[in-house]
Amino acid sequence: MKKTINTVGVFGKFQDKTVAEHILRLGEFLRSRKLNILFDEPTAKLFTHPIAPARSRAAIGGEIDLAIVVGGDGTLLNVTRDLAPHRVPIIGVNLGHLGFLTDIQPEDMTAAIGKILDGDYQTETRLLLQAEIIRKGRAVHTANAFNDVIVSKGDLARLIEFETYLDGEFVNSTHGDGIIVGSPTGSTAYALSAGGPILHPSLHAIALVPICPHTLSNRPIVVSSNSTIEILLTGMGGQRAHVTFDGQVTYSLEKNDRVKIRRAENEIELLHPSDHSHFEVMRIKLGWGKKL
Image 1 (cartoon, rainbow, N blue to C red):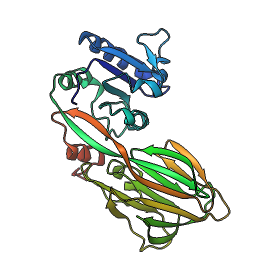
Image 2 (cartoon, rainbow, N blue to C red):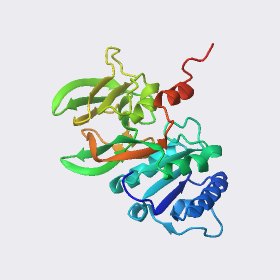
Image 3 (cartoon, rainbow, N blue to C red):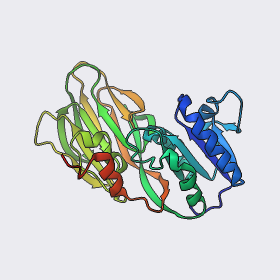
Image 4 (cartoon, rainbow, N blue to C red):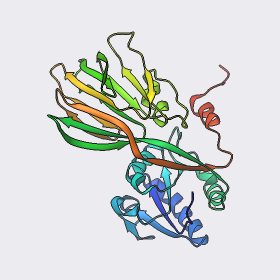
């Protein structure tokens, strides 16, 4: 975190009234530190009377020096995609379940954030994915993903067919439910459930994890984050397939669509308490070492 903090953007869990009390407490604390506060518009709607100026997601990133997300990992994923172009550092307060990214607990919120504001913190840079959907030679949709880009089958229980290319070189052809292209951050999300490897956040790597492949020898692979991955949809078994970004935004695919995925130009900067440990988070969230 290189710049002076003057204005803090506060982002609450979408349409969750229970987050309001935590945001009120956070707001009082930030004002006691002589900091300006902005809400994004969905957060402002949690309150009957305005308690801080509101900005659209498109505008707020250009006006804040720091973002504090009060919610779960899903809330943080949603916010990071919008803030990435502005390179705003982000702090996560966990009101969700797992909390791999939002690592500050509500009861520790003001004390932990106070230490971070005083310069006692760890900073962590994580890569962001960018995906482009090519249809008949033309880009029809572009989106970012912090966790993963997933090409998958539609509602019917039928396999889809697709080909995978790496930097223009053919890798394989697959029958299955789909494929997950995940960042190191996303390696502990859906990709983990599908049998993918856990990647340390500092790695410059991308995991390709097939979802229920018909050929059991089709295993996950890890490639350089400088690679360009292309998924060509060659057959859909009479149904519509789709591509999903972070499990939150989806776009319908057609036969012969090509999904091109690469590392985004911008990265995500997360701020953690100075005693943050990635492996302690893993032990707690995944139950490593628990006595059976």
